[in-house]
Length: 126
Image 1 (tube, rainbow, N blue to C red):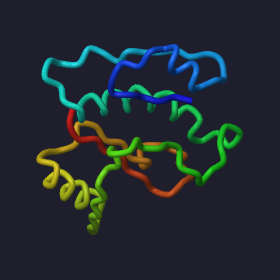
Image 2 (tube, helix red, strand yellow):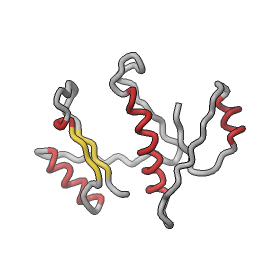
Image 3 (spheres, one colour):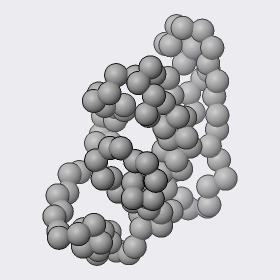
Image 4 (cartoon, rainbow, N blue to C red):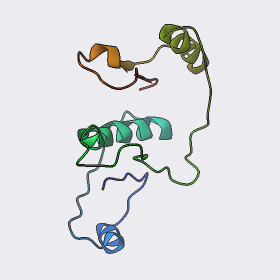
């Protein structure tokens, strides 16, 4: 299991709460001065996603169709529905709403033998 917190928590407290043995703590640093909670959260999400995504398509590692994350109280993202005639139309609307183009994006069209439904992922902000 992986999780992230926005403040220091003593290792002993985590180990006692976890109760299943090994606990490893990784400080995600090197943030620019003045970084806010959103930048910090994105940095942590990027770091954690490397590990979570490793078992994304492995049916032996998880039951398909179940969500893979929980959000702490008070951090639930707001829902925004967009619709358009093409992926670029919807990405354009999102870019207008968020004040600029995505800094990173991925499309299942770039995967030669993608067998799932078409998918696009984009990230705004640093």
